[in-house]
Image 1 (cartoon, rainbow, N blue to C red):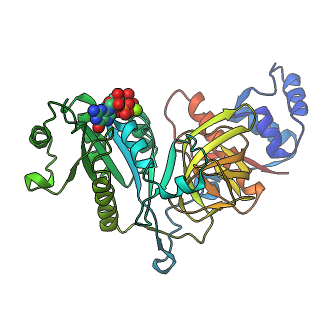
Image 2 (image 1 turned 90 degrees about the vertical axis):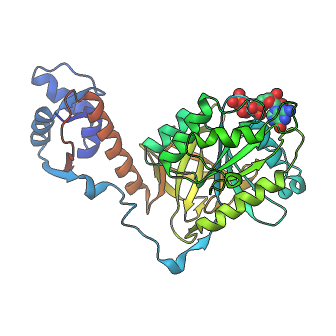
Length: 370
Ligand code: GTP
Ligand code: MG
């Protein structure tokens, strides 16, 4: 059974919600404006108000990202997006901090680097690398389940004094399932009792064969604390990125993925997104999951307002109607009407899903000609 709230139906018919409620009262239904009604009742109301029912299918409303392919000649190289994973306390955050310290731009700008869940560094060679702050394995799985494969490369951190632990193995499995290349960073090599070779051997048991064992997975010994061999790690990331030939079209309407989102007391709904293709600009109108909006401001990972953000750039977006979910896709559309149409449609479908007990084929919804 498909359902719709009275308010939503009223919006679609360009009628007052209170008039619909009145009509239902006459029919003996005591309802409030935010209540959901079933398909039969909705059809009754639509006819009562002299509107026509048209069925709208998914393909009429939804944005078809897959069909919208960028031509080869529009593509430009983009920075790799790297996620750091590994067991608790093996040094993920320390490694991120250390790598962030290699950023030549952060030093120059002298700004306070704020935490936005994702940041980009420019390494001394001039290359850029985007890092996703350890989203936690469940967030990674969640995003993957939503089809949001945002990571190009995974860095698996293993503490040389501790070895392979449950979350290390979990991370290996996630990475394999996602089909993303991995670089093993054997961390804490400065510590007494560190045994990198033992880790390489143990990795074999999980079918991770590193270069030193004649395999293809790059491995590197580092110390996040003592800042040993960070350049080596950066080199391996850049080498892996080169092999992947990462490209995107920067000159088109933007598409991005939500990394995290929250309701900020002063600024309203804020989403940290990673641009995947196109360039997101101030003033752009967009739909993101079940929300929509108009870009009021873009703030980069250095806490600075920027006019735009291109492929592989993480940025905070202000100007949303509500808080989206991690993994939601943000798509720039032609106008506000289109943004609202898609967001309404998705909300409607989500509502149907929640209120439907048995799985049914929900590919239609109500619409009407006012
Ligand atoms: P969670 O976020 O809790 O999963 O931990 P994490 O993986 O982010 O580890 P974190 O960076 O917080 O490091 C854990 C501890 O290990 C801290 O006390 C660090 O100082 C220490 N540590 C990290 N890297 C190194 C290293 O290379 N050498 C030594 N000796 N200690 C390190
Ligand atoms: Mg940490």
